[in-house]
Image (cartoon, rainbow over all chains, first blue to last red):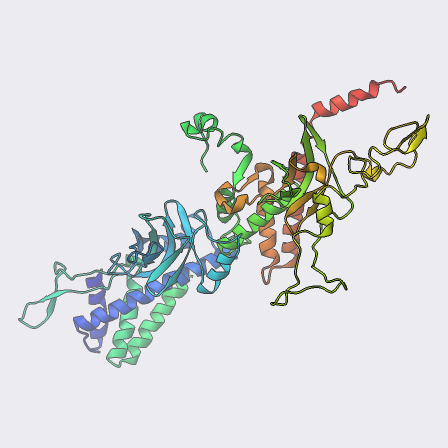
Length: 240
Length: 307
């Protein structure tokens, strides 16, 4: 998908000889555009929930929310957390170094079939003070601080603590080989660092428009920014 | 929790204790209550949304506590021997008493609560009645107050018709040359029915956490029937609620959350309150066990001839 989008972007930019963006710039804009759209999924999901509550949304093929759930779930990862040293109650939150990917949001932390409840730092002391609400093995809880989670009550030694989280999409990278004749880079997806967009194909238009906006700003071409912005707004409105 | 097989139910799957699951089908666990509530009554399209689990847990436990105080009719029984100090320490999960009995010669004899105070705190006093203090300014206390001392040493008379009555064994009415007080000689007019009991008496000191008895209970066996709050000493795995009250607990949680939430319309709160009250009434009627068979036995008394 990344090559198609790059070709479209270049085609639009070259139409009136607006200019050219290098592969490096394209990769930067592509990453930025993907992150923008990725974050929009969560707002769009919430928007659809509200529409359902207002009874202005349908079921079956009209269930737009389901589509967002599927897209978000594509980025879901479930993995065991690493214990922090000898502290039985502390575990590293997901990160590239511990679980292979950074988390965008933690959906749940659980041991066996028991889910831990996330507690705000401002509440945990109060929670522990009340006999009715104090975390127990049946209703455990956790707080987060920096890159670690503290679990209440302290789990037994060697107990596996799992986490299901939504990871960030991988940074897209359009890779190429330089043939040298006219110094035109040629797309090569066999490169080890190649990475396609992780968003679904129906987001290709949005990605193209967003990249065009960044590219328009880069080459100081206001009409490109305006055109891409208007196209994106139209696309968003049509999806509501 | 999944359903148990017959083997798991009757013999706990071969594990000890064998009776762990007997009667368990009457109850639903606290975990099931909270999980079911989160699944069925809380979510994006429900009245209850974005509520922390600990709030649901708190209200579920409060509902169970309230039910344990009266509606459940689940009375716990503890039998202990009363100490030389005539005390019976209240159980760790005690909330209120139902009945206190004296177990003697294989017979359970219900005791009455003494209407008079039988225990007190005291301060040491000088000859001129001034209170004595230690160097930290605290009033000095004797081991026992005079009231406690006379009771524990068996010197305290009782207004009840038991062996501590000041008239017990004493001569009283003159009859054919003898005086009697506690023998039923002829009609006994003016009997104070409030104190007309021959069993030992007790009084509960709630703050001290003990039941104080009169001196006739020393080393005697006492049976305490009491109600708890159902929290099982803080062990959430043991907290259960009768299935007849399951819907009430859900309704109670909903009402409490809606009632304390900002911006909820009053009619919604009222609807939740009415649902909660109605479900409690229904459950109480169900649990009251009015069986036709029992009514029949009572109604058979209609045919008795009144002499």
